Length: 153
Image 1 (cartoon, rainbow, N blue to C red):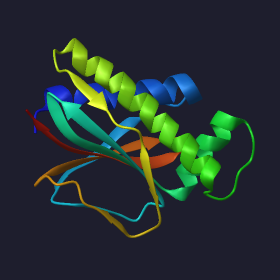
Image 2 (image 1 turned 180 degrees about the horizontal axis):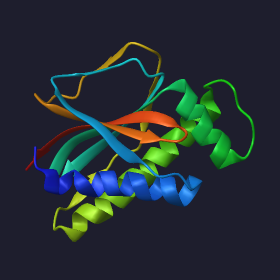
Image 3 (image 1 turned 30 degrees about the vertical axis):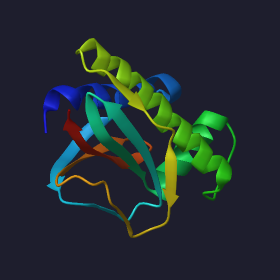
């Protein structure tokens, strides 16, 4: 997996968290996996097509998903519901759109698909590639993972 197309995605993630919520992200553990198996309750899948194909899976615990939406909406929400899944899906969509712009600046043309949200603990997400790079990101709101399953065309 080529880091030149991973960095625009991580940079976009940091930029959106900083701009929308005034929160910085800090990279934590990086692991290479064969599948995405998460115990986080809210997972957003964004498909990529074009020069780079695959998916990005943003994986949030209940705590950080609610913290994000509470900050974005300015109201107290205490359960993952349709409003919460829609909001974190839109945030992942914004991050992925910015990432696509960053990739275009590196001469990679790609498009993103609408977000798909999977709710529930102990979730396995199949991506169709042999290797998945999982990056833990730490914030003052909680920690989350960004999982990359991509191949260059």
